[in-house]
Length: 215
Image (tube, rainbow, N blue to C red):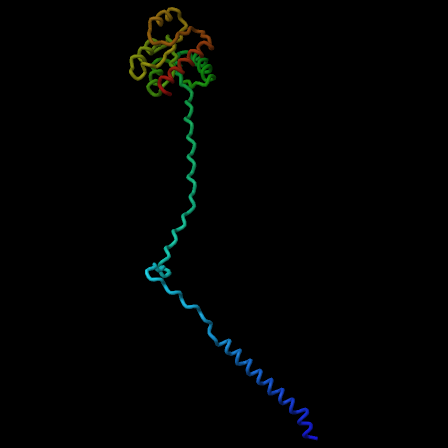
């Protein structure tokens, strides 16, 4: 009975176990050979004799990149040129020994935009003339100390003021005749004068004066 058990049952089991063990050993050997086998690399191609060889690459063979240029900033636009300042108002010198006449003349010409200085006689007028330039001199003829004729002669005799335009004002007919003999006057007005005509004459003379002097 034991012999039949060994033959029919135990012996086949042992044979199967031996067969499985043999298969496992074969598979394991093949697996190890596949892992350990080095990967074959193709041999380098033979270089042709006489052919130029490319230089070996190295860090020194690369030229440094040029520095990045800073973005160009646009040049500032030129500032617009300032327009030349307009010439200021013309200056007049009014000379009369009458305070009423001086007040009327000052009101007339300051209202028209002129700068007006006043003098009560010829001496005061000469002191002002040498201190600042004037566009027109308006003077009475009959005055104390230094009358209008003497003032006109002194102004025309000086190289610094010989070209100063002069307009005479008088209330005496006999003085008007003497004025007609004088040279270099730009007008003679009798008292009471016409404001419109006197203003027009002074404005025209002042304009010509300023054009001639560039100011």
